[in-house]
Image (cartoon, one colour):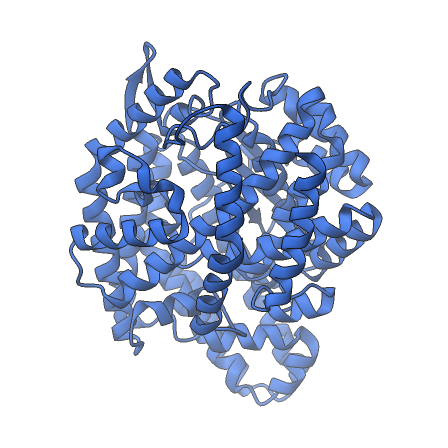
Length: 561
């Protein structure tokens, strides 16, 4: 069914809670694992319906943040999502203490029980109201960033629309655009600081009430990190500092020389060639048609899935007034189809965004046709990002169809993007660990720490001279800090894994595709490290993963400089 025609009906959370608790009562008293399996199926069917309705409402609320009806539904979700999670936690308790736990493990795999054990203590009746407040604060930040506008070049423009100009080959134009962007953000600086401070306080209170030492521990549990912890992530950041920061600095210097400027500034970062970016030859509809062909050439399955999603309007890619910022892919359980949300601005990064989000969509589509377990729709965050980031690289052979003679410039810039992103992601992660370990800092103290961390991982920024940036405000625009704490480093972990598949693809695209397909077919049945072991990919927590990847990157840049 076409997305616009999907019927939305507000889920009855009270009824859902009553029915599930009735089934859980039976769960404790049945005498066979077959009967428990039937109850698990019934509970998951109820969960999938609630998740489908909430997903429809959230998508429509973000497509138009001025739509009063769906903003009311978003408020309903903010209020009732903690209740849903509380019900699911009770279900997890039954799984963990089931007499037939071993049979459950044999049928569904150990990951379901691992997820139950780590998530069972991320919710509790005593914190329901605080969880509602956390959700409302996130929604306010989303609306603020979507609706903020400023006049530029004769038009009122939002943040996404201003981003179109920051990669212009006209240095004065991009300087004007990014200064307008920071002027706009500066208008909301105090409110963003207040929202973030409130999120830190409420998250810390939730963590303490649930028995955690700090929100850091709860944040890791929310992300279902079942086979590694804070020490492994800290070691990973150290390896980024050791391996990725030097190559990033070297590439930034090459960029400065290549575009012919004396000093790289905050308005030069996105320009990689003197003539400007690789240019898209058409609008978003033109690019969709190109991607239909590309995915069909890549393999029949992605081609068919992309065509199905487009024809049935399970993607909205263009910037619109009052549309929320960002890009994501989600899944409609009952319809068994993914949905892609994005904001194309006409830059080369639109190609990366569509490939990335379709990587998620493809994994969801091929795994979930025969899956009804909500926990397995996606792997855990760092694992699911492997399928999305790898797809960005798997379409490299077809870039001439989009960029023509500029295709190699796109590939060059795209690989640079991957390198430049990792130190930044490490910065965000170290910043989060610091602020949630020290939740009573003032906004000024937090910003001072950001500057220190930023200069550690991105030394090239130390000469940037803009009042908004010099105050330590760059992170204000990083949605993940507000909506998905501790998630952002997952992209860097996945990047190391995806680049290993990219390295294989440089020699043998067929083998790389088979590795990729094998990852996608596992869905969420395996933990992150188990998935890597299964697929033969070196863990990002091992130095060999960095050493091998750096060699491949150096070789590629040497050949293509």
